[in-house]
Length: 113
Image 1 (spheres, helix red, strand yellow):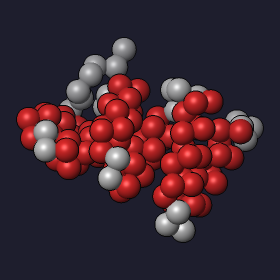
Image 2 (image 1 turned 135 degrees about the vertical axis):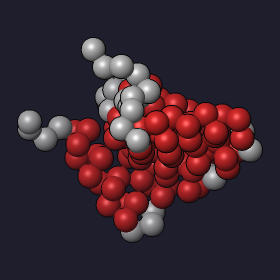
Image 3 (image 1 turned 120 degrees about the horizontal axis):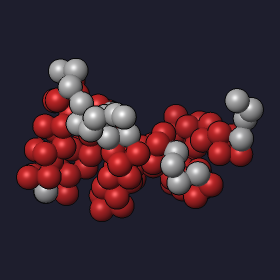
């Protein structure tokens, strides 16, 4: 697959993240998901960056988008659980953690067709 603008932006965002420049990383991750709203890696990375910046509500929105795009992704559910914990939404955190546990044991949250 040829490199796309989205992929270049994502690589640049990851570089900023590695250097600790979270604000610039967030701006680039936002551009990634604007270009490709179905880009799981972009939503997941954006959510984690926002979580580190303390932008919890927006992070949860990104985490929900990631779990919608890949409902059987263990890392996405684990991250969403962390986001809910930070926001004090313990019931939601436990639900997300439960889904992560199902996946960690080899189960599926959503049956794939």
